[in-house]
Amino acid sequence: MKELGDYLRQTRISNGVSITEACEDLDFSTSHLENIESGNVRAFKDIYELKNSIKLYAKYLGLDSDKVVDEFNNFLFQYTSKISLDDIVAAQKKKESEEKKVQSPYTKEYKEKFNVWPFIYAAIGLILFIIILYLVISTINRVPKRTDELRGWIERGSVL
Image (cartoon, rainbow, N blue to C red; front, side, top):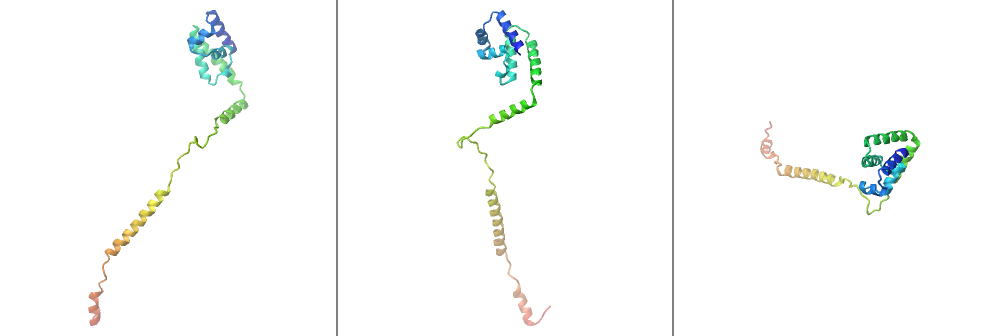
């Protein structure tokens, strides 16, 4: 990446463009452009942002942006193939530890729990209502036994 950054710097200088002028035209910060020209990849959090910045810078300088991006991709492939698995795991653990946030009780988001008890009480109440309704209706509709008609037959001594 250092070679690519040097190439971009030399092209800028040969075009007679100062670094502040290039920063104003591209809407980059000075440190952003200096990091690109020095090949400081670690200054960028997002590799795609760096890639897009290099592409814009190459177009600005009148270079073939596709060739410059291909050179960057070659560097990126060589750079990432040299990273050990231990470094990847350590970076992942560091990222996870940074993501853990401390929250106060006032800003903490609570998940609403679904309360089942009102439904259970309603179901029990409905069942009790149906049972009571059944008992009331069965007592109202109860027909008295017809023993009065049979008394006369039993007293006379005639049995069927």
